[in-house]
Length: 182
Image 1 (cartoon, rainbow, N blue to C red):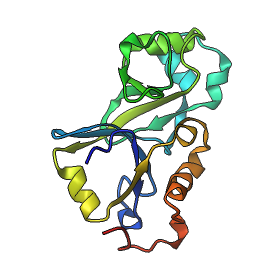
Image 2 (cartoon, helix red, strand yellow; image 1 turned 90 degrees about the horizontal axis):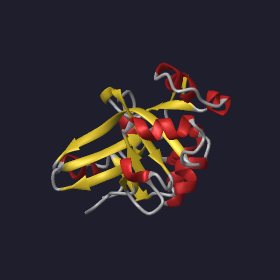
Image 3 (cartoon, rainbow, N blue to C red; image 1 turned 180 degrees about the vertical axis):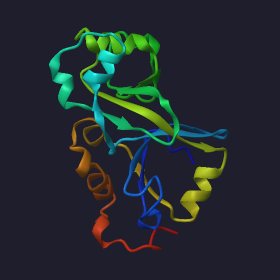
């Protein structure tokens, strides 16, 4: 099972947990574990504010774009999930359409207006040890589906979870705690 470039859809059993009502994008998954970013939990801090804190002058368009709360691990670190960009030398390829970076250079490109068109910036990430994510899926903690870049980059944050579940034909409001796939 390789869940790289998949969404994890939190099941109702996670109520009260950090991951309650979250949609997580898996950036890496192998025998050593998995790494992903929660992509539907905006913070109260804008990308413009982050860029200003880093002394990077940026266009006001970033004032309306929030930083995401990417996960409970390394909350002080920033991660940039982005679409194709010619200067992706500082980014790891997830797919041909999605790249991941934690390099200051990508933030500088964004601030200067010649960064990628599709951008999510998150503080922190979600991580699993080898076998842990597979075990959680077997226990019906998550539904999984192949990721969709329209949901990832363009959908409103509050609609992302339902849209991803819809890829599976699932209505999240109809799920009960304890339900899932087996």
